[in-house]
Figure 1 (cartoon, rainbow, N blue to C red):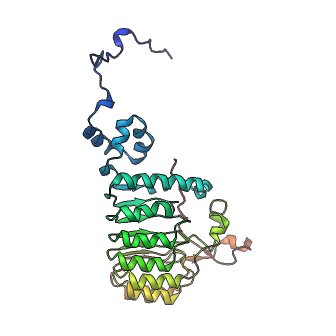
Figure 2: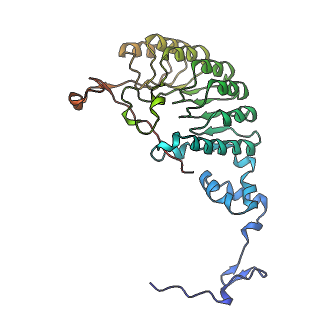
Figure 3: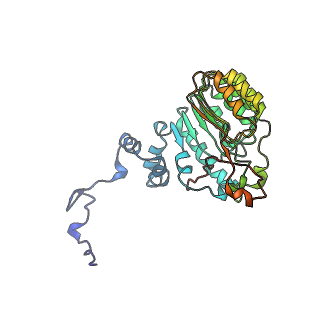
Length: 320
């Protein structure tokens, strides 16, 4: 392949005159702050973090504008690839915390939506202090988020309408009760657990001790939900260990439910589910714990005669 000829003096940009052979040249670093913000508002979050912020000081300054930091969504990146063991390390958690802390500071109180994974109390404490307008909080797979910080979130973010604490095993029913008491606009709540019936899909990725820490008292969760979250429209409790008693409390306390996901809930029967559904007049979608006996069971000793048919846990990646 023929190589392009080297540039000649006549073809090089004239920095003083601002012209080149193809027309006027522009120094992107000289764009006004307003123009930069307008341009960056059309750029994806990842492109801003991995590209625009590194161009020059003026671009970095523009990326910190509050209007560009009202939404912080990493879930699309986590949801696009495969989970890696390094996501469960302290180093990765520190990176996520650092990003979230930066965005909270830059948002100047305008942050309305946060979707991350593997964060900790450190970053969420600042969220509780500085994000009174927060409406969506998703912190799936955050093993070091505890009741202590969720209590702060409950009082500091009263406008929450969507909360996802799936796979956060250090958050108890006490936090759910506090959220329900303080966040009266809550309509979407997700408290999914990992597949404890067949944890093989998580082995080698999620630390074994964390898999063993799966919450046991599903009825305590159900009690808090049924008593303190009466306005829920969407509820997910995959692999919860709630029983018929807990399901009744939910159906009685959350009568407006339109969507209920009970995939993997091995302690409730078809009759229990039918009874609960009869009380939910607005229910449009019900995902049931569909069980079956696969052929491979005859060669399986570890998991006995029953296995759960479930949507595989979405453990994906955001490259930092």
